[in-house]
Image (cartoon, rainbow, N blue to C red):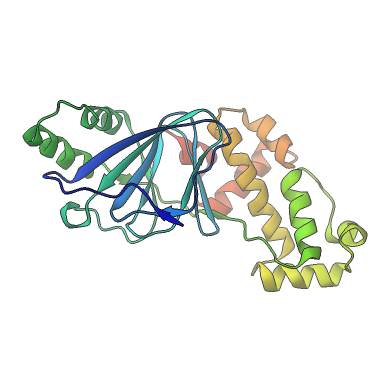
Length: 250
């Protein structure tokens, strides 16, 4: 585990970094000494914190508090902007990773703050407005804990490889080398949820990159195993707390 994006001594609250991430790239697990706002200026960013998972088009960013171990990746060619905020000069006190709406004004401010020739006074004024514009989006992050038992792991990997697979645990039993009852117990004890609830989370996680890329709801629903867009939207809202449109909206 590494600690990247360390904050040097500075007279303002924010430091901005930029990195090009090819599609499929994942940075190693790491943490920062300061808070980070992870944002994709272009492309689609993914962030893992433990078992929690977010996908971020340019209309969304993730506030990651200092010291939180995470990894960042890209599902498409992405320009990652890391906005790092010193703990002692940051007015935001959110203790947990928080999804943030990036509306046009905040986007322009973040671009403005990236200018190399911006003076300290102008930077401080822009930072103050940018902090005021950090608007949390109230969502429940999607979690897909993986079982450690090889039999349950066989089932979990099959579902992740094909979220539209409609087989039930009884159908997986021979392939996994365990009875339906044993598989159900393993998911309950190792993933802390039933297999059915676990599969919903796996399907919803699979939907996030597709939604972020702008795939129509009908196609997304079919790709991840739902019979209709309305059934998918209802499942998404029950699990996440908002509709897919509200999750990714500008």
